[in-house]
Image: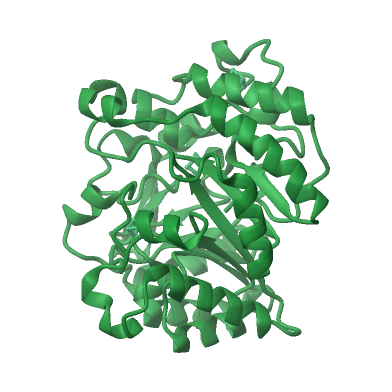
Length: 383
Ligand code: SF4
Ligand code: SF4
Ligand code: SF4
């Protein structure tokens, strides 16, 4: 089932975050604006609008900061969606979190969330290095480091899962710190009780200009794709032998056929509501008012006078038309229907346009497809 089948309403809940990750993809963007949490009024209108126009009842909480930092709003939105007269009884809930939250939050998650993706970079030392706690939160976690809080929460959720419909998975960013430790990470996650892991090669952060115009960003980026693939393949087969799923962002469409890369191409079936009241098509376009070159993904805005969303039809059409079957460089590519023209967010961030091409990533996708081939539907689609 290609990734564009992931139909859901996402909430970019809050810009607040309790970690200081070294590679945070949006730290500058978040810090440049005043702290914001999505107003309940907008979230509520979003639920009404989405449920009126879509069959899916899947909702999701995501950045731009750490969603559990707006716990009350998350509870409020979940309660509203689950009690909605139009299919609220079918609501399922997903979250992507850094996993560093308090005991009252994890107890609520156990009872209310169905899919939880923990942003995890691997063993404690790497996690601690890449994703340290913001010092002002030290007292809240009694001096425990971020990696220990995360491990404690994962163990607690898995051991208390019982009959709850909950999957605890990991989403791992691969950097030069863990690129050659993928097999070791398989054992680490296995011992924690995690069975589903998606890995993502490090990608460029989003700034005010596309990477193609940013020499400083280009020269500071360092990722050995060949090394990632070799180590990924070793870990993939090793994990398979242990009954564990070790996925790669580069393979998210290997389980079906689609000319679309992801849900971003069908934004009305998978909208993301931003903290400042816009509809975004992509996880990498986190605010509407400061979108800069990522503005291509801002496809609507909440209108307080009508209490509804105004849609930007031309931008929606441009995303609908962004297919691998329409792009010159994808014609004749053996991965055409198992890649879908690659990630639009990364492409626009790097080239400032929807039809850019990163040949390093194309070669990586093709190589993985030639080694792994296609597969049956993934149990859990990439976050
Ligand atoms: S948890 Fe996410 S939002 Fe927070 S600093 Fe890390 S990458 Fe950035
Ligand atoms: S970041 Fe890439 S995969 Fe994620 S929603 Fe945006 S285009 Fe799709
Ligand atoms: S691998 Fe490259 S050329 Fe092939 S479909 Fe993906 S983006 Fe297009």
